[in-house]
Structure formats: structure tokens, C-alpha cells
Image 1 (cartoon, one colour):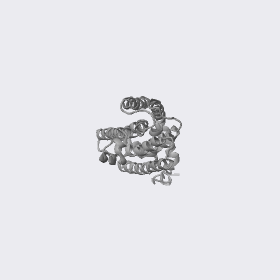
Image 2 (tube, one colour; image 1 turned 90 degrees about the horizontal axis):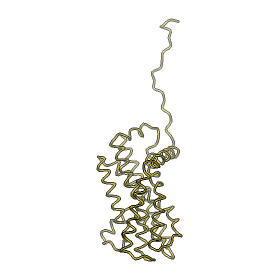
Image 3 (cartoon, rainbow, N blue to C red; image 1 turned 90 degrees about the vertical axis):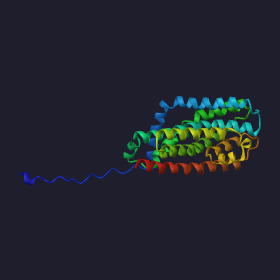
Image 4 (spheres, rainbow, N blue to C red; image 1 turned 30 degrees about the horizontal axis):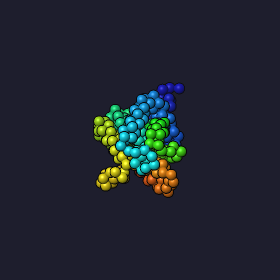
Length: 264
């Protein structure tokens, strides 16, 4: 055989591997983020829990314990504040840092749907808050002499509030033009959750109550606070949880769009 008889080598590009499906990719991102959070986020979770317990101690001096709406709001707001600190504040900083340092390029090269990156990361950050929320709720119930029998409602409040706040935090981090602005937006969002979520709504001026209605986590706070009553209005509890879930769906959709925009 001569050189002229050598078969031609094809220069056509090889076909790409098929993209991963949404749920398996979401599970992989969730496990990776949760493993990372176990190492780097435990001190921050302690800070979030300590901060919420400190607010309970402070409010104990101005709010009477016992079965009253103000005590209900303080305990519920302090518990959900742990979710706001981690899912909103830290997630805004995380995605802001990824965008500023080019870390999004790594995810963009993977054959995974953008929604799986956002949802998996948000779910990891939200689930990471579970111990702190239950600890804060237990201490608050003890300090304000409230029943702890219905804290199981937190199993619904945490994922729904976490989805709404994590989606908002991811969107803030991805849409901010600079990393410093993403950090500032996360801090302002957590401050809003503190001021509008912990303080009893009945004691806020009416214009501030309108702002409170725009805060996604306020519906989770209200749902949890209602369960402290001797005979809770479960219909209203489900309504507040439904609103919180709907807002979470919208915020996660916005975060997914922001991820696609930033990855390009």
C-alpha cells in the first residue's frame, strides 16, 4: 500500500454526549453543594442561629410571654430568619462570587440544565438551615411559654420559605453587576427579613405592612405563627403556605433566567 492509498481521516466533529436530565442533574448538584456546605457553612449556621436566639432574648424584654399574637410573631419570625440568613444572604454572595470569578463558566460547560444548577444549590442551602430553625423555634417557645407540639409545621415552612428566599438570593447574586453589590443586596434582603419578619405586623405602620406583604418569607412566618393559637385556622395556614410556594416558584424561575443570562 502506498501513501496515496492511505484512507482519509474524517475531520467531522464528534457528536456531543446527550445532556443530563433535570432530576438526576439536580440531585448531583444538591449532593455536591451539601457536601461543600458541611465544611464551609457550619460556622455561618452557628452565627445565624446565635443571631436569631439573640433577637429572641432582646424581644423577651419588650414582648410579654404567653398566648398573644406578638409572642407568636417574634418566635416565628426569629426561626424563619435563620432561613433568610443562609438561603438569601449567603446564596446572593455565593452566586455573586461565582459570576465575578468566572465560576459560572465551569457550570456552563457541563451538560446539565440551568434549572438543575439553581434548584440544586437553592435546595442545599435551604436544607442546611433545618437544625438552626428547629433549635431557634424550640428556644423561642420555651422563652415565650408557647406550645411546641405544632413545630412540625416547620417541615413545610422551611422548604417553601427556603425556595422563595433562595430563588431571590440567587437572582440578586446573578443580576448584580459587581460582587460587592451582590453582597450588599443579600445583606439588605436579610435586614428586611429581620425588621419585617420578627416585629409583630400589627405594630408596624400601614405603609410598612404593605412592604411586609412583598417579602416572601413573611407568609411562612405568618403560617408558623398561626399554629401557636389554641385552635389554629388551618385554612389560613394553608393559604399562607400556598402563597409562599407560589412566590418560591416565581423567584426560582427568575433565578434560572438570570443564570442563563449570566452564563452567556
